Structures are given as C-alpha cells and as structure tokens.
Image 1 (spheres, rainbow, N blue to C red):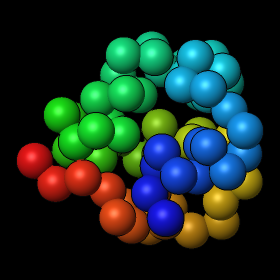
Image 2: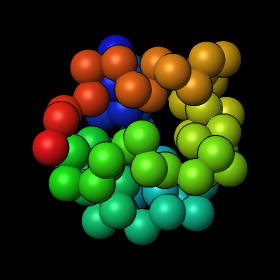
Image 3: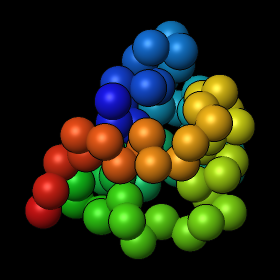
Length: 68
C-alpha cells in the first residue's frame, strides 16, 4: 500500500496530511504521483508521515509507489 492509499485509508486529503506533517499539498501530490521519488524523501519527513498515517514501518510508504 503506497502513500496515496494510506492517506485515503485514513480519510485524509492531501491538504490535511500536508498540514499535519509540514509539507505543501503540491509536494505531497508529487510524491504520490512519482514526480518526486519517495526514496529521496528525508528520514524526518518519512517518520512524520508514518506518525500521521499511523504506520509503524516506513517501508509501507514505498509499497506500490509510482516509479518515474
């Protein structure tokens, strides 16, 4: 399950999740669509996303993520 699926599963919009973690909606969308490789995300940001999405394993953010 990738970032978009995790966000939708939690019932959050890109704007809501972005506000929780300190990321713009545009950047979050870029990560979801693969325009920005999620593998290049900072560790701190990936941990904030995991906390906000209640995910214990940061690797779940990579699962099924679009490849550029």
